[in-house]
Each structure stands twice: as C-alpha cells, then as structure tokens.
Length: 438
Image 1 (cartoon, rainbow, N blue to C red):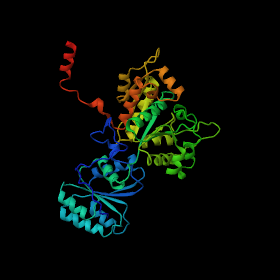
Image 2: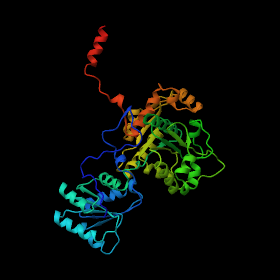
Image 3: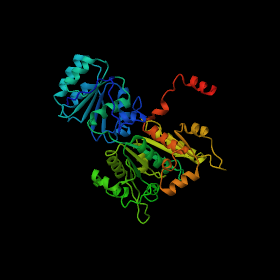
Image 4: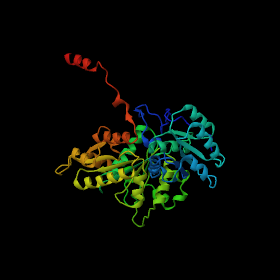
C-alpha cells in the first residue's frame, strides 16, 4: 500500500482553479462537481462491499464518463473477502473496501491484507464512523483515503480523482461540446463567440476544435486560412503530442487558438471514436479550456464527444423541430450522464420577423431546461461580423448578443461577474431620492 496522506473526509480542501486569476471575475463559492472529479487514468479498481447499496453506488460511478478508462470490478464480502482473494491473486492499482468492523478488528484485517499487497497499490476504505484517531491510524498503515458511509457516486469519484491526479501539475482542461439541435441554428457561431469571450474574460488559453471537417467555419469566422489543422491530427492520432499540437494550432489572439477543419471535399473523412477521444485528450492536457464545435450529425464519435464532455451546450431556434430534437438530446444526456450537470440550452435567432415562433417560456418548459442565453435575431450585426472575420464583441461591444455570449462563457466555466454580484449600498435608494429632489 502507498503511504499517501489525504485530508480527512469532510475537512475542506482548497481547490486550485484552472487558468489565471481574474480581477473582474469571482470564483464560485463551491466548485462544480465536474471540476472536483476529474477524468481518472487507465487503472484497475477492485471493490469489496458489505451491502448492496454501496455496491450499487460503486457500479454507478464505474459507468460514469470519468471512469471510462478504468477497469472496475465489484465483489461482496468486505475486507475479509479481500484478504482471502489477494492471498491467491495479484492486487490492482486501487482497492476499495467497505467495512463495519470494530476499530481493532479492522486494523488487524488491514495488517493481514498488507502482507499480500503489491507495492504501489492504493487502498480506499468506506467506514461507518467519523473518527479522526482511526483515520490517522489508517494513514499510518498506508491507507490512501477514508470515506464515511453513506457515500455518493460523485464523492467517490472525487476521492479517486484526487489519488490519481498530481496536485503539483495543472488539472486536466475542461471540454465544452457545442451542438445544434438542428442544422443551421448557429451552433458554430455560439461556440466561436463563447470561446472568444471565455479567453478574453478569463485571460486563459482556449482552443476551438472544429470537427465539421468538410464544412467547418472556424477559419472563416476568425479570418484565418491555416494549411494544417485537426484533420492531420485525426489521421494519425497516435503521433499527436505537445510539439505537434503547437504546430497544428493556429493562433488567433493572445489566448485563443483554433484547430481548424480542412474544408476540402476531394477526400473522405472517417473519424474513429478512439482517434477523436485521443486527440481531445492531448489538447485538454495542454490548455485549460477546449471548445468542441460539433457538426449536426449523429455518429458514434459525435455521440462519444457529447457523453465525455464536461459541459454540453445545445443551441436551438424556437420552432417545433428544434424543440423535438433538443428534448431528445436532453433526455438522452441526462439518462446516461447521471452524475453530471444538465446540458446548457441556448435559444438563438429569437424574434425573427414574420416567422411563427414557440415562446421562450414554452420552449424551456417543454425541454425541461432554463436557457442560459436568449439571443435575438440580428442579421445586420451577425452578417457584418461574419464578413469581417470578427467576433460580435470585437465588432460591437455594446451589442446585446455580445453580453449574451459572455454570459454563456461565465456560466459554463462556473464563474460569475463580480460587478454584477456586488450588493448595492443600503444608502443607494436614499441618495437616488436626493438626486431627484435636486
């Protein structure tokens, strides 16, 4: 067992945010679940439980996207079964033990287990009592973590994540997947403007990965014509590393780079699930934020990106087809991503002249989500920005849609505008009345 001390379950632990600190923005008071439990590497985990409820919790965690690379086996019988099992079998990277044994009996069984543990094996115990003295004794014996029953899937994933993510290195970057409920709803525009706003507001590096290889608009929207891009990485994903990534990326501003699509029709594009996952993994290891611009297709790799992303942003316009498709997407994502936050909804091109529309309120009620941004139809501003190769806020910082994109950026990154949250002075109404009297 490894002798790696961890904070006692329930004691606060400071979270280091990704990216540079901001003067304009406040950090959230409580980190989002997706920021606490990071993706776990390709390790083997074996759990020995005493009751079915705990076994079910571990199984739920095992099916989560963050443990997609880990190999998890769940057994019954608790620590006593584990002692017998490892007398004849090699130990995995991590052993999870549930135990209701009295203190002395538990420590005695751990001593027996230690005799058959391979070097480097970590042990996480789920116990019944919140006892600091017991916890310290467990640490002294090489136990990596102790959680007090009952545990929730996210709590378990967070504990395992802390064991296998080096606190001395930058956390794995966040992946935001942008998808349209229907073709032509402006999902790419939302993705690009949000990513730009994110890079400007947080002063942190952001990469846009354009996966619409044949018809992507990232190069046009940022007035770039890169010779290389994401297709080169996807063709040989095993070759992609930090050096090659730097060569393939096109820098658009101090903090924003694009992984542009080739937009060529003289070749076929066959994206594999594994290759797509590998490329996004390399990018997220090198930058704090990755915005994935997904085309409106339903393929294994596109579905995989949605299921593995930290946040999903669905863009829809207020008509019946968008309502149906958005509802189907939301239902699927909430069914499979049970331990993640709900998808984010952006309603785009609202109040288009002479077009019958479903009201925002009715759309939200039917989908079951509150829109994080409602963006009005504005052909003049959006058309001019597209023709200039600019983002909306670059063209006109006072445009209503510019603040909408910044709102999306702050929402998905779990940040908030400090100026907007400052409480007004208690004397403000009184002072305002004095001004009016004058």
